Length: 201
Image (cartoon, rainbow, N blue to C red; front, side, top):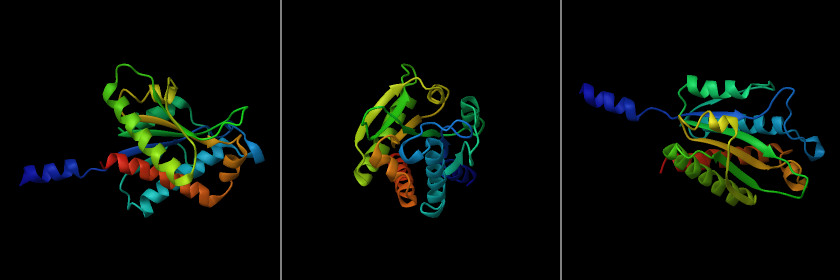
């Protein structure tokens, strides 16, 4: 009976997910058309993901944000939070910018050649989020890219880690998209459902 209870406790544990809204405070990130600031867009979407996890998924995941207001958190402290909480997944939210008419969403994973298992999970999760978001929202799918960003590098040894570029604030259509609260909710929902679909298969 004790062994059975122990088994249920282990397999009933929530997965702990860190949502990392990039930039903040004096670091605005990209500033787009209509003065859309990346730091505001990503924070609003992060808050919505956490809210929807609570209200729609009944707290399916144990979720924490690296920031809950307009403050600047160092990249190292963002990774330290994930380590301190022993997070299962780390997801960093960003918006893209370009001098050209670029548009669409892409996901970055670390360019590691050693952490094969976490890299494989990162790619799978990224593809699931991209599929859900681009199909439901009509954004162009730019695919999974590889990079050595600090938040990816400091997390990939311990957990799957993604950096999502949720569209270009320098693109007129995508900048306007992020000005509407219902679109912030829609983006948050598709990211959450892409994550849910991957982690429950």
